[in-house]
Length: 456
Image (spheres, rainbow, N blue to C red):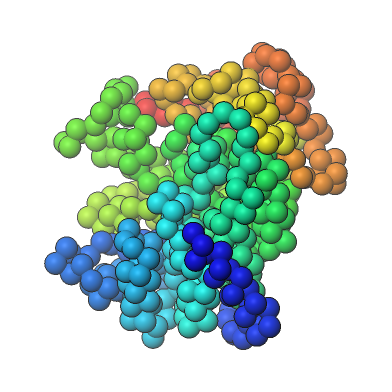
């Protein structure tokens, strides 16, 4: 822990006085040019070396059609090993790839394991390898405080200070940083005043910052709308989603209409390759421009290519060629109402937000009233169960007055007291694009239709 703090100080001094001397081309990301982040197929266990990994990555990249190469990077994982071994393995992989001219996204931290590269190591990677287009921080967490009482972190939280420094470093090198979040962490990050300095750092370097949310969990809608809100209020430049079909298995979906634990021969992922298409299109109508894939075995060079051929590849092609990804002005037009979380430095204050936003463990008034939750806690809701409304972006306590006044109404915790009242409150702001329980939404020139029974 102390090495991180000391390295922050030392590297910061060098960074301040020597500056950055690196010529590189900034990665282009927009609604018309989204970013796809692909993992490399896992090499044969007998080739469990950096050389074997690089061979697998190069072969996969060379077999990827040019369209996807033009929008893609290959991700280098943050391996589960001690700091020295992780650093040596990553350095070895990058050295072997140096002359290949393959755009890379390199993982530099894992919040779940609390494994993070030291700042001076990260700067060395950026200086020495121009092929690095983005850095990835996996599963960064703000929910480590489980006891009741104060939510405040340590006076100097080394991991948050590390993230702030790396965000600034990434921006100086004109690269991107992809920060992956899950659970209620987006809400915790924005609502806890102890993290205000992190929010300010993200906003100051917004063009470099991408937040992505893992699809398929019980708080998927809240996570997506939180990131969408940060994007609309100008705190981040882009946002995106992380997808993998095993989320069906984690959700307890065995086959249509059957819940439980999947067997080896009958798994949810073997039944639902089209779930990828649903996730990708759902991200598109919310303005997501970054799509991160976790399971290489389900892509073009993996062992289960039906996912790629039947759903992923054609949908990614449509996102670009048919212009399905919503521009920010279209998202704002579709979302006349927003929700602003309350700042909370303790669990009681934070819980006031959850009365509206957590439909699994709390009342979730807004979640039930706006989206409909059929079986909370049993069936994770990924898309609304009605086409009556659109997504309600969740804004931070720091959203500017200009942002707030751009919406017809901004709701606050406690403003609406029942699920029914939420539906009545929003009725006057929306014109439904369809009837029934399907989620139907017109965005731009296209109509999107989603069946809302996730496991049917």
